[in-house]
Image (cartoon, rainbow, N blue to C red; front, side, top):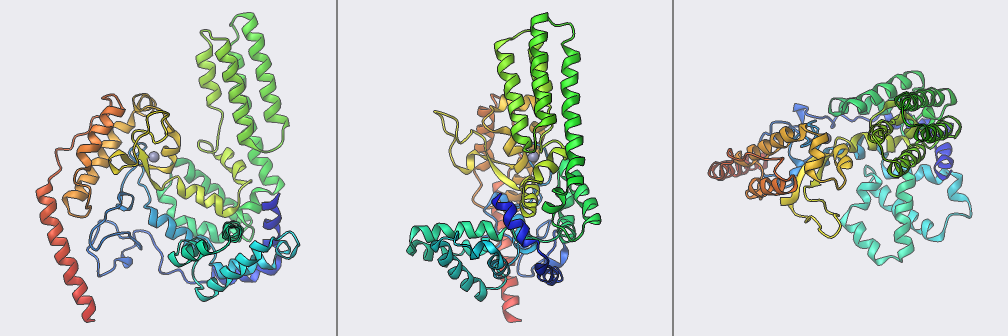
Length: 460
Ligand SMILES: [Zn+2]
């Protein structure tokens, strides 16, 4: 309700001029793998990036290695700094603009706005006006702001977060969004590519509306809802067919559950997550209490109910409840390079350490999927993981040997052992290509090249 309220004010026509002004801004300093961004002061990497966390000519954060592929699904992941750069420079409005726009909203004039919020607003606005190109995320990550917040009353400091959330609701129209995301399309998984295509088609029809507004248009919403419900009913009908010859009592009880599930999918309004979750747990509980030769297969079938990670219609329905910026964040987070704890961090009674030697790189999507499942079991449903983990470690070894990655010399050996233990011998990694002597030589060369280029640059 709250989000929709803010959404609606932001979309009022008096803001359209702002929006157009902003869209016309020149973003020529942006691009992925575009050669023009090769900074002369830095040695060449095999892809070029706009922003890179590094110590001089070296990288020490594995999430910043270019072209690293997911150890599970094998897609080319996006570096963290690239994702953040994209969101802050392409998607979010600068804070000075978004703060002005939320102020014009009735919300801020109502007595509802707390005193701490007003104070936080004034402080942020002042900072944003002096730093006009920074987004709210960037401002809040500044050391000076972090320190300043510690000196403020707690309720004012907390209000900073509320204001951050509000500014994220200041959004570009779909035409702008589609042209921005288009550059990332090659990074996406299959499903996210489909989602992008849908959004692109919709934006041709409604270029000046936001994704949020488009997905909430009754005709658009009904289209995806219809498709989704159809798929859900199909699965339930298949279960009906499957139990045709089952024992009478079991069959009757299952049919009852199917009828309840159909009613939930067909007659209840929105909120897809909730519905799917409820139906799955209803069946799981029932099948656990009534195990027989049919129950495993029924459970498998019911798990195939579409969700936003596997199905485009489900994604669009979920998206209709999100802000447009949040939709883009979801797409990006699914290809972001994230740390996967080989031994799960939150395994009850036996925590995996927060150590680099317990990490491999998984895309956000795969990382969300594994949870705490043991590797020997997870690998059964994801057999490609064995090859893809080897590919990733090979790449990391290449970066070590070439002198690019530092502070990880012990990594291949330690991660090999961690994977072996966690997967009960199912994931065996070969690290024979590691050559620390070569790494040492290459690091010296890189440092010399770096110093030389820096010297050249200083002369200019
Ligand atoms: Zn993956």
